[in-house]
Amino acid sequence: MREKHIEQRLVKAVKAAGGIAPKFISPGLAGMPDRLVLLPEGKMAFVEVKGYGLKPRPLQIKRHETLRRLGFKVYVLDEQRQIGVILNEIQAT
Image (cartoon, rainbow, N blue to C red; front, side):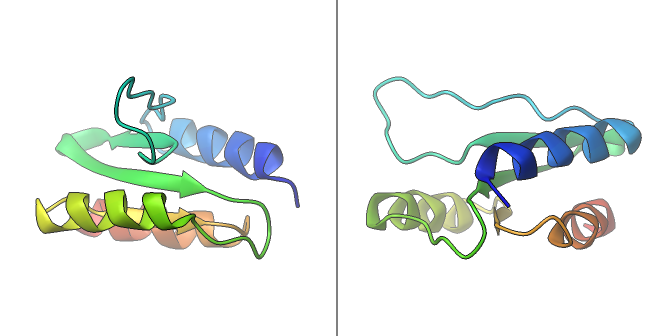
């Protein structure tokens, strides 16, 4: 499945869970994840969306590591079936 379709399904699932998933754009800081997932009760994570089977680039991996060191959850999503698992994990934190 293409990245665009996976991303659309993520946004739809987040909305169904009562949240929003704005596109995350960070001028001057390349490699940041594609989406912020903001759920009720202050639950939040970053999600990097990739086409099926694709992996983050080295710069993206570096940014993900930085965010994780700061205590943020960061997920790489490349399959539609992962969406529910990711949302459940964000809600459980």
